[in-house]
Amino acid sequence: MALRRHMKNFVKNYSDSEVKVREATSNDPWGPSSSLMLEISDLTYNTASLSEIMNMIWHRMNDQGKKWRHVYKSLTVLDYLIKNGSKKVIQHCREGFFNIQALKDFHYIDEAGKDQGYYVREKSKQVSALLTDDQLLRNEREIARRTRHRTSYTMLFPKTTTTKDCSPTMSTSEPIPELPDS
Image 1: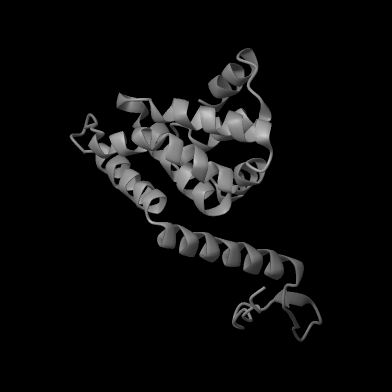
Image 2: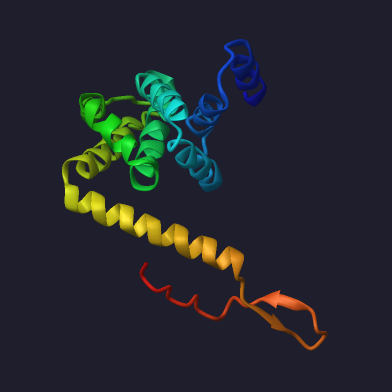
């Protein structure tokens, strides 16, 4: 499946931003990685990349049937970008709000009789709530900012302890110190 996607990316001459969104919203049975979503969110601060990212997300959100994961993962990426990306993502989402809102009625029952559309409907409701409740949106963006700050802080300044053999190891029992608000 990955080879086929790679070939399609090459043949269609997709940009780096589009390739990342296609990978994050693939039909694979696992979700997009945190590092990939972080890369995509960083790209939203570039106007050209933002346009490519949003166009690909809207395109993937229009898939149906067996490609329900494209839709679900598009909403998952969108949720992440709303919380972590450029504020222009929010503007794009509000302009295309009807597309997100329409997914509250998404239906797909797989071969085993499982309602996979349920996940799309629920994620659509979550994303819609973020876009319509300014206080919730501010809170979620602040939580995301603090999480990114803590993560980058612990990656830059990991706590180490020395064992009897003098080899440094990560201390997993010590809590991460609270960072001052900036």
